[in-house]
Image 1 (tube, rainbow, N blue to C red):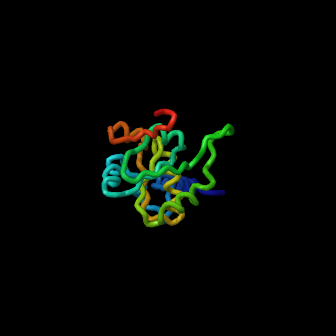
Image 2 (tube, rainbow, N blue to C red):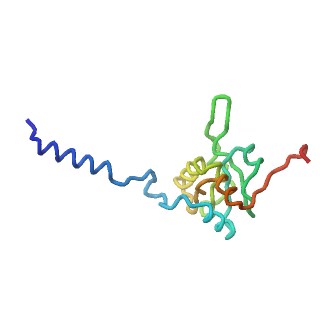
Length: 153
């Protein structure tokens, strides 16, 4: 029969283990992968490139206005729901080198966090996710741009 002292010791170790800080980032990912919108604004003014991972439709309705802005959707909305863009990494890799300085953004910062993790795990060295996304950018009243289609002019 197992002693009560042994059981309590095992439970104590288990409880301590559960409360240890854990991270979802791998050892190769920087701990400061997400930055706040003010830091993102500063980096963009210093020449970083903004990569918006929202859908083309979302992007055209309004996006961060900066010198270098690109749109590569991380996922698409389909009749079956949202689906990851199977060409996301390939498309980004065709536009940027792994050493380029990128700030990633989406509507709220969640989708772009997933996209940032994909790029970092694929070898991109200087990629940061903008916490709060386009919503936070607009709340700060930072510059935005709306793409007008020809038939809207």
